Length: 91
Image 1 (spheres, helix red, strand yellow):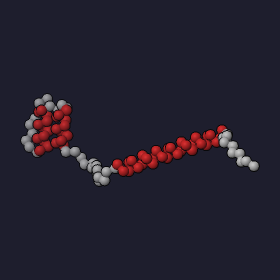
Image 2 (image 1 turned 90 degrees about the horizontal axis):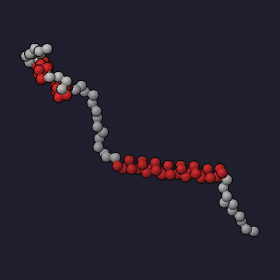
Image 3 (image 1 turned 45 degrees about the horizontal axis):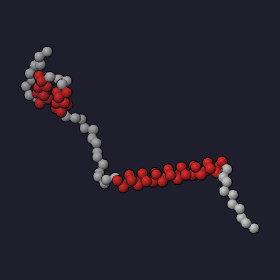
Image 4 (image 1 turned 180 degrees about the vertical axis):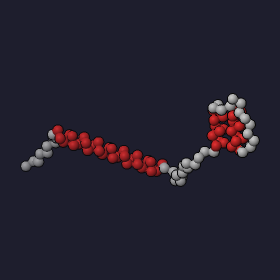
C-alpha cells in the first residue's frame, strides 16, 4: 500500500502561510534593528538639560545683534544692567 500525500492547500492554507511568512520576516527585521541599535549605542552619559534662565546681558547682546535695538538703547540698557550711570535715550 502506498501513502499519498496531498500537497494541495486550500485558500486558508495559502492565507496562513502568507501571514506566517510576513510575521517571520517582520520579527527577523525587528531583531536585526534591535541588535543594531543596542550595539551601536555609545556608553556616554546622557546629556542633562537645565532650564536655567539665560543671562540678561546675553539676551540684550542677541537683540542688538539681530537689529531689534539700536546702539544707544543697547548702551543704555547695558548700563542699567551693570548698575552704572544711566544716559537718557533720545526719542
